[in-house]
Amino acid sequence: MHWLIGLGLIIAASACGHNAAPVQLDTGATPTSVPWTIEPTPTARPPTAVPMPTPTGVHYAPTVAPPPVHATSTPVPALPRSTPAAARPPVAVLTVRPASPAAQPPSTPAPVRCNFTNGIVEIRPYSTPQPPTGLTAFAAGEPLSGLHLELRLSRTTFVAGALIQTQVVVRNTNSADATVDVGVSALPQTAPADPRSFPIVFPGPGFGRPPVTVAPGQSQTISSFVQLPFDADQPVHVHASVRLGTVITVADVPVKLTPAGPAQQLHIDVMADQQQWCARATDANGRTPTETLLTSMTARSANGYMQGPISSDTATGEWAGRFPSVNPVPSDSLTLDVFAGGEDYETARAETSVSRN
Image (cartoon, rainbow, N blue to C red; front, top):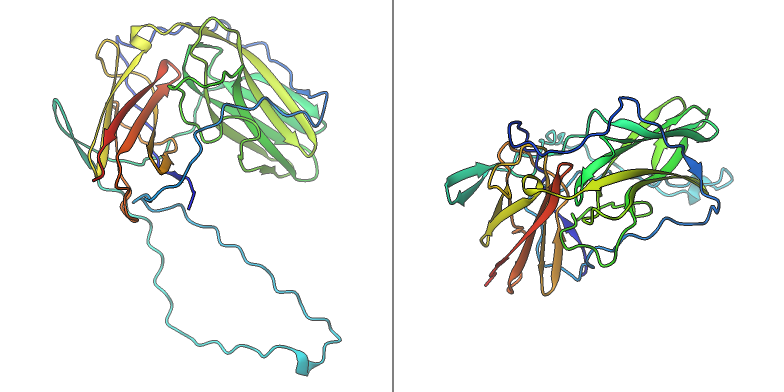
């Protein structure tokens, strides 16, 4: 069986102090807004992002509870009125049983015990990332009648290789629902991708993000993670795309990249055994990061690949997770990659191997 599994960990290490990354902010409280425009050719598609590794099969499953499945029902078509009563199917007789107990909420995963060089630390895995706040609209407009769009960023100057969060706000002033496909990416994209690039589930337009339906008089905010290029010398823009039917509207906000200094370069120590993994991030000076970090884990073997979505938060730059144990584990070795990045840090990657024999 060939399939892809996701586990999750994000980190928000919030603190402040003398080690804050020296990022140059944009001047002016009210930025000049870039307009949204309609693509000249409705059938044109945004540039294709560099593909993620192709899953080749896996023999393990996560220990965490899967997300709830939204059950759907298929209505049974009514029989024609002219159908004789004798031809109708018999009515099923229902047996009354005691009511089932109410479903219990999933239990919180127990902390993972990580034996770092300076002592044992207990880290609770699988927390949920918080949406970004305080973003500014750097692109706004009404490219289609009644459809108002904004592209929000925290600023337009970042360290090269940063992982940033963006928002697209869709406001519908029409009298009918508007179902839109939304995606955000950084362009240009290079192939092959830098191996440090953060593994993002929905990297840009047309990558399988579920469509969003905005009711009349309502608005929806769609958040995304965007990996910026690691080359500070090339011009880059954040590209947002919103498709309504066959019409695609786009906005491009230029961003400035600055080279990463020692305080913006991350170093990740990762360790793992057959049951769990632990990681700790510091900057190039050996200090704990002072800004929000995001992290994700991928694992691969000769016959499997597993990717973890973004999630987890601590104040110490430490993350952990457990390996799946529901299905038989592979007998070969497992290669583990841990990625970490943020708006004020260059994305970093660390790798280790675990023997599964």
